[in-house]
Figure 1 (cartoon, rainbow, N blue to C red):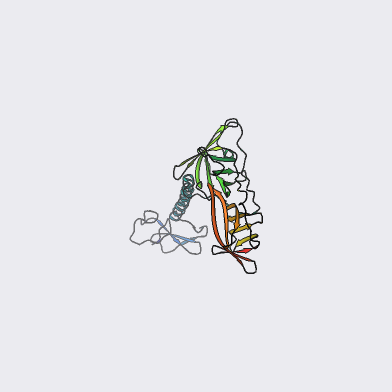
Figure 2 (cartoon, rainbow, N blue to C red; figure 1 turned 90 degrees about the vertical axis):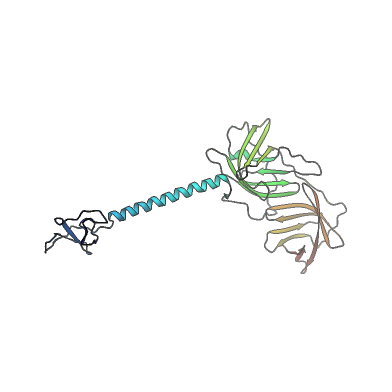
Length: 321
């Protein structure tokens, strides 16, 4: 038997269609739904059918329509949940990653001068622009033989840490929302992570910066300053090996050394640039001095070979540019 309302096949013994809940009785007209789009109508018991060509085939019955609506609502709900979940993760800073991160190795030609631009007048509103400039920890002090880290935020979204004769390059991203100013710092140092920030002060009295780590709750306090660069001069009585002079790259281009005849050396490793001074001795060792906190001296075994095109330093091979 065919249900007169929805056209679905139901058992002859049914008095109520289980699909559309239409009550079935002996006096009703029954519809015979055909695949060619026509419908034949007859009263129960009639032997002949009257044919109607005005019938249009149904593409959705009531149950199919309900399923479609439920599917749309489900997709919208999942989308809203996903957006709010990402916002929550971003706010907490545990897994948020900015769209751009300074991942390419530093190059010899990159500017290593720290930023010196500060916010102007009295700070009234917290914006990412308030971070522009150089900062040091509020209780950090240095001397002629010691160094402290300076953090510089530049207008182009890049930043760097100057620590003695070491420069670490990175980037930062504004992650502020309506209620909380925030910044994500991407740099190979202890400052990496997502922070709430608060800048106070004015041009006359200076500025202070508070960074609160969103993941750990740790608080870092800074004051505005002009970053100081350290210089080690040269090692007294330094000696050079002419075969060392030049620029040397590792095979993957992620590390490099540059030795110059004036007794100075520059080392690049990823986003870290180390400026130092060097000398060589008769043991085929290169002695390098640099400063991070205090002056540090390292002795490295080296060997130039391959017709002067290869340099091995502590078992790492470099190729002359």
